[in-house]
Length: 230
Image 1 (cartoon, rainbow, N blue to C red):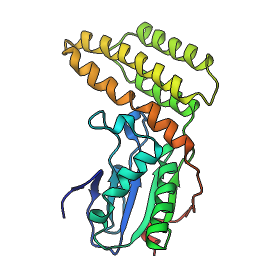
Image 2: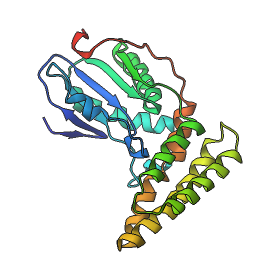
Image 3: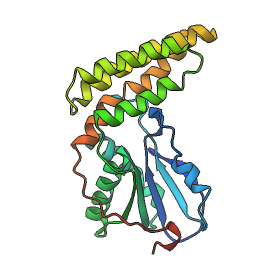
Image 4: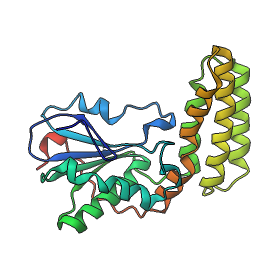
């Protein structure tokens, strides 16, 4: 089977019955391990497919939460090829979409897969700020003073908005990240177009974050090891 399907990427091959799906948005500067790292630790040959995170290409940037879910649902027939879903994994904001995807599969197939969530929760300004801080802290090429200036601007943006003001905060964080990327590229002697490409990923955050926050979270959480899933 191909390593890719519409909006899905296979991150672990296996011949055990069923398929595991995973949803995570690891392009936001988070420092924790991803589901790819988890796959390296699996004791049994489970096939795992990862929802492809939104990219600046195409119409992802204009998609709503329901639009993201629809895009991931579209490619599932190719991914599953008639096989059942053993479980759906979700991390942080991805947990909201993992739960919603399980609801969708339940409606389509008459059986809602188990959902295993890691650090679950709807996205908010606090989580957005945590990830953005990780991005700035990771810009080692910048001076301590430059990073401190960016973080001070981040704090000012956060304090000027309500904790639920995801869209305006995300938009201003994206602009601030672009400023940091411009400094980074200038310091490294890299073409400025790279700065635009890096910042473009952050510009997807308003729609993604707001879409996730608007999804209703109703997960059936299974605190069990993947090797013991039915």
